[in-house]
Length: 186
Image (cartoon, rainbow, N blue to C red):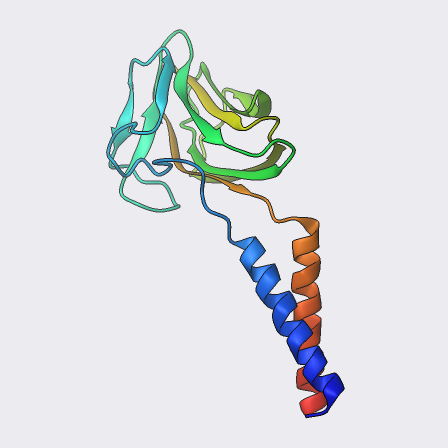
């Protein structure tokens, strides 16, 4: 193996390792799939009537999901997450509306509205994803619901730090180096 091939191999492996390690970021949400069978880790807010956790799991994971059916006013859940100011986060969750009227659903991250809908149509679980930037060391993730005639379901809530553009570049360099090494070997 010549010196250039060795150098490319080391750069490729380093770029790949750094790129992959930056992609995996831990979920900051406690009990995001409600697998405790209750709202452990969350604080209920507003009208908490007709809200709870049951065995109607979403498409993501686990055996439980949260349901919300406050009548006449909104209610929901919130959780304060430890974040880094100025850093972008990926926020994902599974949402299942029943098409009832009147109903409403909203989600916010640190006061930034991710989604706000009135009378969402009946659909199967939808996996919704958003990007938002934290403005402080603690960021509230809040969901509000109203569904007078039925229930809206929430499951698989996850928040993780988004990969830096530089991390993606390192991953690309690593992949290109591995491709080049393989091509040279043929």
